[in-house]
Image (tube, rainbow over all chains, first blue to last red; front, side, top):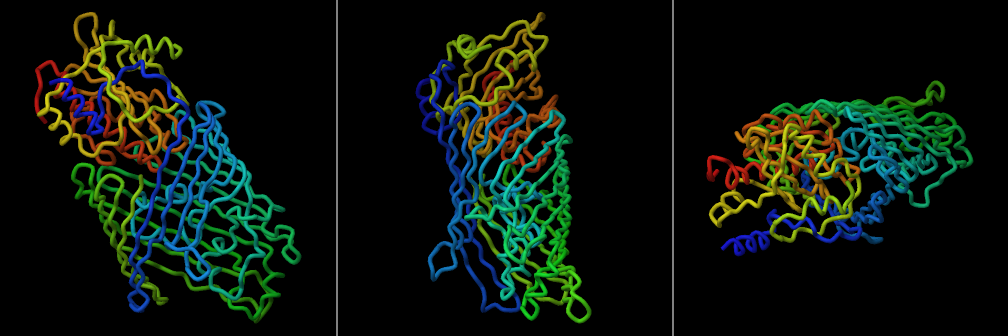
Length: 374
Length: 189
């Protein structure tokens, strides 16, 4: 009987008693992944409703020895990637990580920049709403990664310190004829280690504290040259800093973030672009407050309503070009997002939300989504 | 303690059950003996035990434990003090995001928990659960069979999977204690 029970446990894959003398295993290969399926219906333009397999990501890790491991993720965006389709195939992360001590490691390769609450934790089960919030998309580029070297040190009292030297932005990629730079100034000039220009390197520093259960508070700074040695772009520089906090107490989760970026040395470049649709802004910023309530939770399957208020401006100012030539700052966008997340089962989330832009710029939308992570 | 010594310590009459293939050890913070001393410093002896569950109990455990991450090797000891039994000591492995977290838990004779210890953590993300303040949330709790991450146990933003999975593992061990080990005899949840 007992043997049958144990075999049943084995068949169920449930935890059970083990012989500690199990032979030592070889270094292991591991797999993981996440994905997002989204339906988006603009309130003012329902004819533009879209249903999209927004992301399909497969990750692979390999442990070379006790202290050295590979982390990698391959992503397909928008289902099909070809010359006539909107999709992209991207390496989202690919780096080697090596432990220096029990509390410190170095990472070399293509990795996510530690900025904000979302960039390093962007899987759909880890944020509220169908889409990533506007601030951590338009101001802090979404899934922002660079190539280089990074260090992380964790202290016993809950401090995490991260620093690194990496590739940076390439301002010569700015497309003044498109609106991409208005959607996300830094997102339009990032390089993602695709034959990235590496004349100018950047540095980053991030500090986070999680020593008090339920509280996370932190800040980061990224700065570096963006001219990349290209003619006409000398002196261009990008800086982005942000501060953030999340407080989780019982069924309430409160988050706040402020981010501000600056592109300096843009005046001579914009002079050459005068008359184009999109000039390079000098400053941009964004902030949000978010409250989520897990009061409807049952077991480990919470139904979580949330409310998020965001203010952001992707072109808050331009470098002075002289009277009559300096572009006017864009109006600030203000968005209120009300939504509901339902953790269908462990690792699978269903989402619904409505975005109401409270300014006059339009853009309200209804969205439904399915996300997973394993 | 090296691995051979640890294996000798483990060479107990435990039943073989296969788990997901264990990974090579990376960051080891505590051996079993060190975790035993950390959780039950007043103990005088640790006796290996093999809890027994019948089919009904197993089903009850599975239903009550809620969503569980993949588990690895699970071991248990009865903890003895100078004046009698103190409780039980467990070691378990639960997947964080991709690798196993090895942890130890103590359950007192009255069913209250002692703060878990992280014995090995192999990932660069989520290691914040080693923080003592987070682990202390489990200490002295009598509702171990019902614990929920982010509600009963405060979550660590950026380490959510590790928090969720360790909390689920503790819930499983508390239920196992209730069904198979508690001095008052088995009780279905």
